[in-house]
Amino acid sequence: MNADRTRGTIRLSRFARGSHRSPGFTMVEILVTTAVTVVAFIGLVTVQVLTLRAADSVRYRSQATGLAYDIVDQLRLNRGADGSANTALGGGYDDATLCNGSARHSADSRNCQYDALADLTGTQAVTLDLKGWWMAIDGAGLPNWYAMIQREGRLFRIAVQWDDDRTEGNLVDPGETRASCLGHQMPASMQEVCVRTQL
Image 1: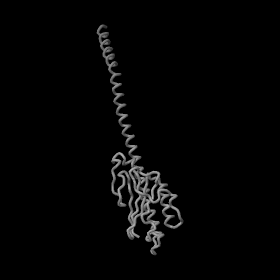
Image 2: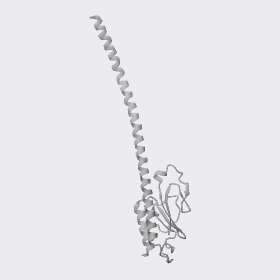
Image 3: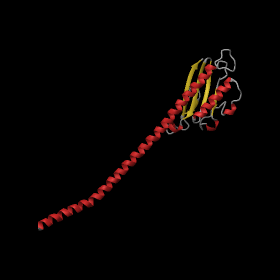
């Protein structure tokens, strides 16, 4: 009987000691699990933000490419072989520059020939083409956009640029510039689609 009581007492004391250790161990487990969960959640949120930015960048590039080829089609439709000033080969589109003057990049000091749709007046084919192009680019939502048509003889160079600061902003110095296909410098955070075609 005494032995049983002793064994029972020993068993109770071991059980009691184990029960005192268990809550402390569970608290450490909870803290570690919480820390791991928070780190994983922050990682997932960061990946999601970067994915959304990359998706925006891809969408802008796709839109800019379509817009550049759109004006190429207009140039071909209004090619003109007679040298008329209201045609592409007659110089009607030469150095046409468009931008949204109210949303230019702070480091972008290039001049715009047409920085508002209201600047494009007239009913000639060239003016109507440029109006349509201005409206299409502005409607696409490209941030701080700039577009230009350059001509050298029969070779035309069309560029559509936009500020990709959301994606590139943390990777480049705000004052840093790089060369554009148009021959001038542009802020390093600007992206560009450049199309060359011969008429």
